[in-house]
Image (cartoon, rainbow over all chains, first blue to last red; front, side, top):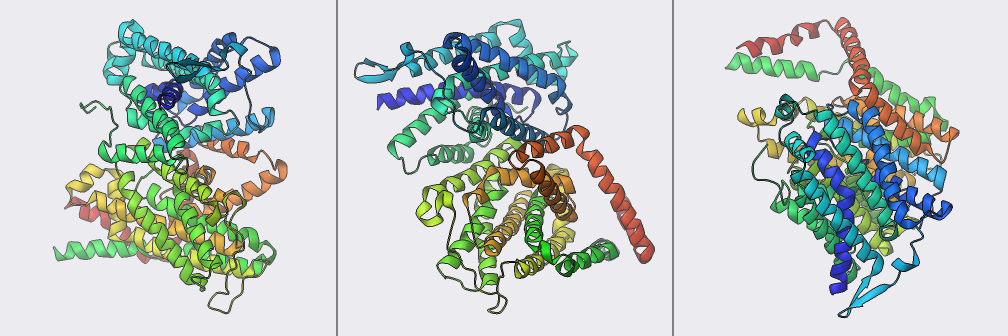
Length: 286
Length: 349
């Protein structure tokens, strides 16, 4: 029982790291980025190549995955995404789905279609037994890393100058522009950072979520649920939504294996019927 | 009030008149039965895709609902038609086709209430979620649906007990084309009706539409259900003409490809889906001969390039073509030109 809760929390934390970049970019530019999962996949494959082929230590592979994906994200943002911000949602969906298709096919071409595994170090395998609760070491690592990241993100957004600029831009882009905030630059940096986080999440999650070329398609719905259920105005919303989704999914798969993925869809539908604007949306309308 | 009402109805009738080019289009479409008898299999696929795209156009082009889950209706009706034929519940294919459409429409009606809540993003999530859920269901109950191997052992009885489906797809093509035409006529009737006009109003500005007394919610529910019905007919047609149904009828790729089809042809324009389907099939055929395995990459590239160039510019070509066509039509039927001024007149009052 508690083990399931533990696994669910680890899973949820992972989803949060994967999806928080998406929620911020969505809230900031009202931009629907279905290709977010592609960045996560890029991070995952980056780690696989580094660790398995070049023997880079796992602990070093993670930050490199973050940096590489952030770079790719920043590059794409500057060269391609900027042209699509002002377009209608239909264009954004078409554009990002096109990117996903390209990413899937390109990965299939270069890396093969089989599932990839990261060789995680010996020290992270096995599990601790605390008060009769089996805690996988690797999942513990995920919780610690993701928890730290969450705290860091929260501090970054609430305490720093960049964070206040970001919040101002999310609240009202036009006024923020009028006050001299370079919204484009804020967005570019946020996008790159969000992509980097997705990459890190993909690298960490390769072990739990599985990593194959269809990754961006398979987890697209999870990201969308996190973002719509959590709302896009803060990071606490997506965080709680991710935890709910993670625990719900793990518990559902454990207790009612026949229903499998239905649990999360049911959660989604119930939440949507109850609070169409998202579970944790702010009451003030924008 | 009377003259205004007359004017409006005259305007609507003028708009809804079949232009010579439309008639020529359909004559050509039916002529393909004799022109390309060797290509009937791929033409059948094209006709089904065209019908499917038409269903998406009804909600995307006319009501502005962004959907990634049109495959849900397609797949549900596909399995419905397959199962009904396999176990011999309904022998007559035409009846089974309509029943499958109704089943899809029922699903559309139920899910429409979820879809109508929230923003574009929520709609994307819900439509995608519904189709994934059905995919999961079909996968889970593989004893009924055949799972990953697909539904096998489906035999479709002859249409009206007379026209047997042959392996060259001749019957299948004629059948699909007739169904496409009938559905098109219905869709055309809907779009040019006052109901269709009110949908355009809802798409343009739903707040104002509700202010002039259009029940926005029910209009959207209705069109979503109708669209689900057409998508279902398309799915059932695929099952009936191929006597097979597999899990990929429910896949996300199918919905995403459909968006591409519609974008290639142009949205908010009934022939968009039809023309798009033809272009798409040619493109698919051509790319598949170049790189059979990675053609998804090129599809993605086409999508990205279309958006970067600008849908409007591609659509602009369409609009230019359409105005040309309209002018041609006006020359052939001079009476139409004075009807065109009608909207200006009653908007001034």
